[in-house]
Image 1: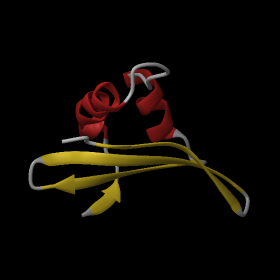
Image 2: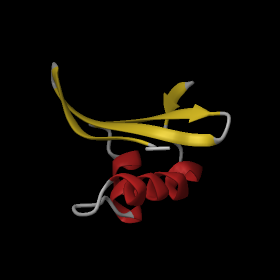
Image 3: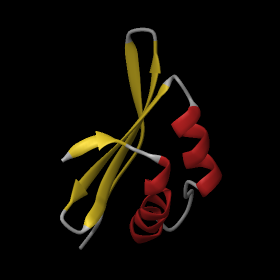
Image 4: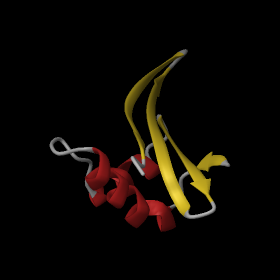
Length: 74
């Protein structure tokens, strides 16, 4: 199920960052900031095993920019 991210998802988002990327990782503070940012959309895919993917978009007027996307490699 795809849904908006919640603050309780931050630890799972950090695990995904480390599983998917070696450099330029988003931090806990980055995710907290994006959750408060009214021009950001942070979506997660929550499967049976918990959060296994996310997409972070930044919206400006009628356009959206995909800032980051990650899917559990497993």
